Image 1 (cartoon, rainbow, N blue to C red):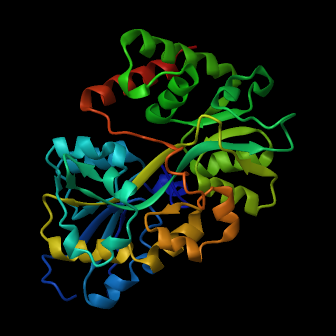
Image 2: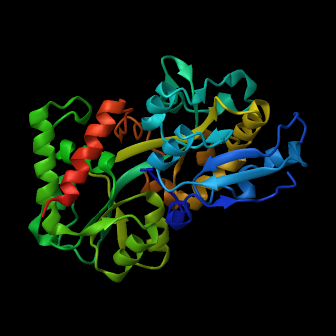
Length: 352
């Protein structure tokens, strides 16, 4: 998913501390504002309002490669004021006591947030996540390599694509895809259904060129014509189509998979007021407009659509009133579900 980006192509720099001393102050600071984030989101254009309000405040970023790494860092005692998780991970963070509920009345830009996305950031009625971006996991198709355009997640298993499919190394995404193909509710599966999902994913392996972990690699494989169907994010379409490669980012008839990401305040933060000011800057219309135009992601503020590249809007159906309703958004997993899914996925990858 966030999956992610493009900031996600910088997976190789995961966990590297970007010690950017930002001449970016007002609220009393207990040292640098520490942001645990995806690479590329440190761009000043995203948080320009914060810099203007706090010109002398130092901000430092630490990058992570995926949601499990971000969670593991905070759980192990790593200090950050803010973290950028997916909504499907929110319950795990809250249950671990890592996050502080956010008083949205302190955010000037909160009123513009789409209500359904705001709800995705709640746990037990409390707002823990302030949504910034949302987007898809879907199929990027080399239109010149396929005889007819796929229109279903099930097409990934079509023998004609043997050796030309790629999906990313994600238990969450692949289990949801297989469960969707089998007609299961992925979040309420019994043992028999879990076993069927595992078998379905094993049956996909002859069609796979591989599982990708490096965002740049799968883009290159699609561009080279080695991969014809790739499970990936909207910004892959931006990158590859921008190189003149004939690709389409389809909407399977079962719906694209969807994710919501945003900023959460850590319970350990010593800079809570500053952290809220940073969030407020990130959810401004100007910030989200830049994000949407860089990555073709959906913005959590609907007003941003007026400023987005029309080609991106059309390709991602961002102007469709029911686009959010017909997207299968990842849902929060309990810790036991998360462990069961990880175990299943490890067994799939280990199978011949």
